[in-house]
Image 1 (cartoon, helix red, strand yellow):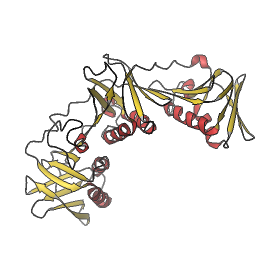
Image 2 (cartoon, rainbow, N blue to C red):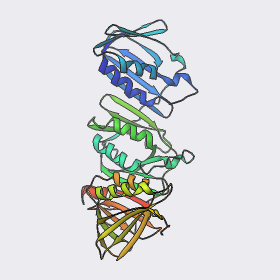
Image 3 (cartoon, rainbow, N blue to C red):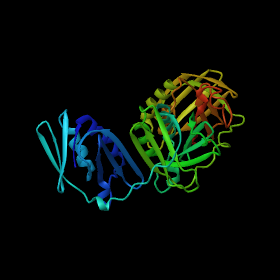
Image 4 (cartoon, rainbow, N blue to C red):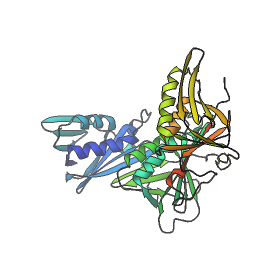
Length: 388
């Protein structure tokens, strides 16, 4: 095996495939990256049983072949290689890397012990890459971090006609984002739902954000194990989680709720300021007043307090008070792109539904393409009962 490649191309390909490498593994070969050299191209692959990543790049191949090397070691080498062409050659059990007079030698791993990665499922449709990355980031903040409840650590992806719905819930908050997508001919039948690990999906979506279109591959059969994401010359497969998230339709129906409209950036900055005096597990309190047309954001107890007043429009009640975990509230506010927010408020200890300034009231909101993008993203938070 022998090939020649530009340093930038090699570094980018190795970095991409290294996303699938496990942080720790009892199986040494899973720490390896598989390099396959064929006529005019180099393919770099990584696999850790949950995720498989593969990328192709151009290379001058003198001798075709394949080799399994320590992935993170190769990644470190690529970071310090001088710019210019890189020559790579396999000599026995040693893989050599040379560029600009600098030489590195890597021992190889036994390829015969490397598990076969899953095959890519058939393409089901495509979605705008940048919009998909944004949508995944908006809902993933609501996914749980407790691995003892794996179902709640996922983002649920629902495909129904020409609409994709992403959702995540950790029992205290529930985020939903809708966007358009284009199913393949014959794939727009019954709705399909899959649950994917949130951290993996965020990483995949971010890495594909500039590729134009993400082609989504899946097998709609019940129990099918993986979902594929392809963009340009890169390909990633993510293993699905078992189960599905609880429905959000009834949770998002807030009959009789007061409605407040407030500027998103100003509210986020106020929460960030007053939260510096909040003790651990201490909430930030929001006092809405229709008569004064103001929102008082405050935190702390006794002499250690902070407060800031903001303008607000409140309809449906004279006064409403709610309180939130400041980290959860800031996550929710940061997930919105709209300058204005609409908050549907039931009161202390009750649900609060946050949407863009043009969001419509209701569990389902307007259909995609009819009613504005603001209504496609909503974030439900539970208000803390404590109020002093």
